Image (cartoon, rainbow, N blue to C red):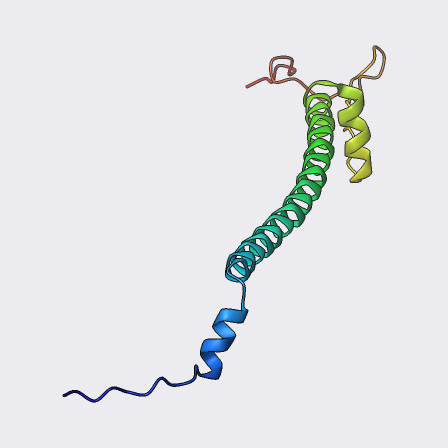
Length: 123
């Protein structure tokens, strides 16, 4: 005949397992998932706020640079086409428009002799 084992008293770990309700592991899993979700969403939210602020600052800088560019284009146009602007800028660098030497009637001694108007010479 076989010997029967005596019925042993349940161990402490078995007793604890019976004491822990079945919903505790589920609640722990749900809590962990919620904590991870909240953490990821908060991180994303703060990153989004930072990116929005950077975007706003960059758009403002683009606007400023665009206005500056338009001003420079206007200045270039006037420097190329407006004689008074050209003269004003030239004076800033110490450049002066050369005086034209023209002779008046009666001031023959100061006038330059023209090649065609030389007095004939005798041979």
